[in-house]
Length: 310
Picture 1 (tube, rainbow, N blue to C red):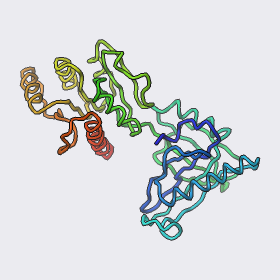
Picture 2: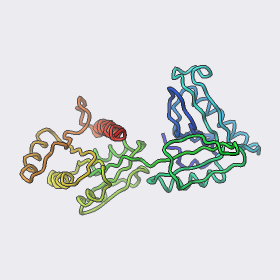
Picture 3: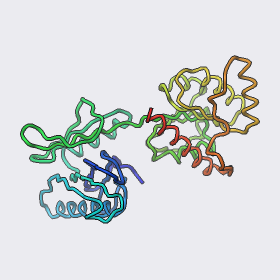
Picture 4: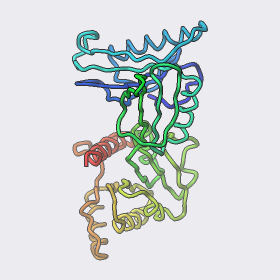
C-alpha cells in the first residue's frame, strides 16, 4: 500500500492517530490519506478504519459542495463503540489537505531522509507548519489559551541497507523492501542492470569502485553482498569486516562459501564471526528470488527492530 505522503492528485483528507491508549491497531503518529477514489497507507484496518474512511469521505463531499471543512478530533473507544477486541482508545484527527497542510506535506516529501515535526491547530483558525525543534512522540498539546495543537514528529527511517548486486535476487529484495521503514543504497558496476524506476526509498549507485560505498555508508548501516562475482564478493566482504560500526552484514551463499571466505580472511586477521551466510530465515530453502527476498526482508526487519530497542 502506498504511503500517506504520496501525492494524491485529487482532494484528500489526512487522518492521523493523534493519541492512543491501551491495546490499539496502530500507534500515535500513524497516518492515512483518503481520497474519493481510495486511500494511501492504513491506520490498522478493521471497524476503526472503516469508520474513519466514512468520516473522511463525508468531509470530501462537503468540500465538493463548497462547505468549509475544519480539522476535527474524534475519540473512538474500540471495544464499546466499535466492537473491536483490542479494547483500547484512539483519538483521530481529520484534516482536509489544502493550504498550509498541503504545503507541509510537499515539504515532508522532500525531506523523507530527515527528521521533521509538524504542528497543526486542532481548534480555531487553520494553521499548520514545520518547526525546527524535535519531539519524540506524537501528542496533543493544550496551550495557555486553551487551544489544542497536534505535535506530530515525522521521523526518517533509521534502518539503512547497502545492497551490492543488481541481479535477480537483488532486484527482488529491493521490491520486497519498497514499503518497509528503511532506506536502501543499491550498488552495482553494471548500470544497465538497474530498472528504469526504483522505489522512493532506494538510491542507485552505479560505480566501478563499489567498495568505496562501504565506507561512505552511515554508522550502523546494514550490508548485503550478492554480486555476480565471487571475487568481488570477497573484496566487499573484506572491506565490510575492516569497517567499524557495522550494524549487520549478510553474504549470499552456502556453508561451503562461508568456510572458503573464512579461511581466506582469517589469514588477513579478520574474523567472520558476525558475517551472516547463508542469508534468510532458517527453514526456508526455496531458491526462487522472490522467496529469498521475502526471507531476507523478514530477517532484516527482525534485526532492525532489535536494534531500535537498544
